[in-house]
Length: 297
Ligand code: PTJ
Image 1 (cartoon, protein in one colour):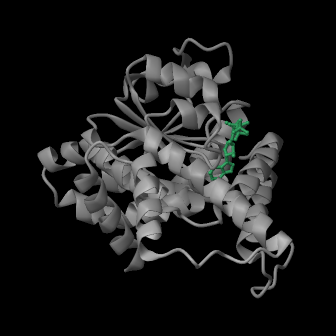
Image 2 (cartoon, rainbow, N blue to C red; image 1 turned 180 degrees about the vertical axis):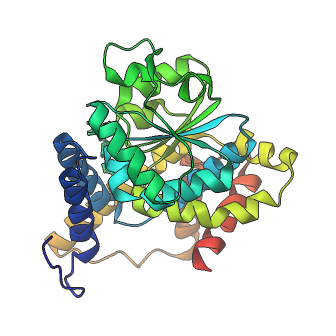
Image 3 (cartoon, rainbow, N blue to C red; image 1 turned 120 degrees about the horizontal axis):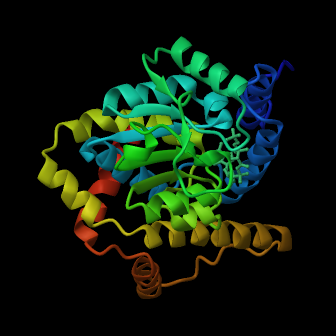
């Protein structure tokens, strides 16, 4: 492993690369997983390498859904296992979700290694080795366990490739995806698309759980029902556009326009809000504020 000095400006990002690399060395992560990480990094750069407000909101809704589900399952692939094995186990323990290994580049050896890694991190049972081709897909992701993904009502899928996400949705399952690319088929077809780095999303979700566990089911449903995934996707794309424009202005030496009078500013804020409006803005606000508070604690 390359020694990365803590004061390196790209420390976090370089350490994540080391983690993925170590996953390949351990035989858990596919080499294709390195490329997937690179694509993720590029999108992370574009969203500003931080959990944007709408992702925080989607994470809160994802927690509510996992708590409400009757048979929630967390699907684990080679990248997720390398990046956040302990957090995946904690999320599963705190929400009662089962863990199931499901791979695109499936080999029995990789399945076993990922199961072992999750168990080393405290998991009791990990599904995936007795998978059967139960999903209508032409590739290895079709192989799922009957009492796991096949029977699940809510499935959490970090770093998916789009096909399965669509198929699971067609099977009337609710899909929560974590994908830094808001344009991907996965992000576009999931019910809750978390446009955030898995390494930030999981600890944030774990922090939120105690708060939501104290709420009754009716309140949790209220939050879930008010959620509109389109708003979250639009917000992520909008963030990328804003960041690109800010960079472009910086390159051109264009100063930020501070000459707006109060009225104009208010109108602009109102327009932006309208573009991102929730079906029930009051509830959306409540959840966003709650998420933001939790993050600051
Ligand atoms: O372990 P396997 O065999 O199941 O294979 C896993 C990979 C990830 C290789 C496979 O599912 C794949 O090829 O995925 P894709 O189609 O490259 O999609 C991965 C998506 O995850 C891309 O849209 C990336 O932007 C996104 N991504 C990459 N790293 C992260 C991420 N999203 C969130 N957090 C990350 N750290």
